[in-house]
Image 1 (spheres, helix red, strand yellow):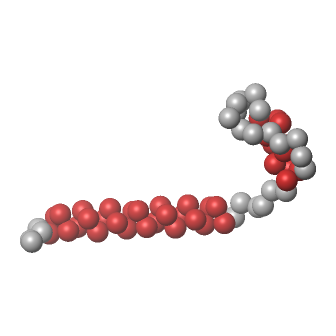
Image 2: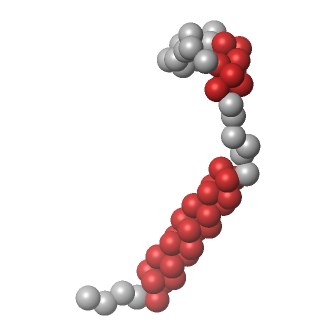
Image 3: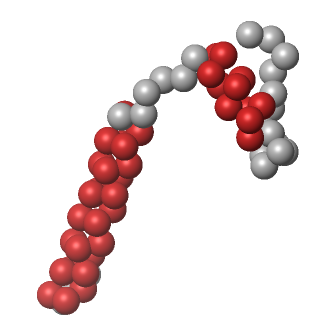
Length: 60
């Protein structure tokens, strides 16, 4: 199997972009503070009219 220089460059560039995207997504998610059960219930109640599939628990 042979690959030309342009195709190799494109594959490397695409791979680097994917890694950067994944790493930045992970960093973003790690910096979101945890939410308590009470806070989550309040959020779900507040946004229930916009999110009909969001479960609103009666416990907690």
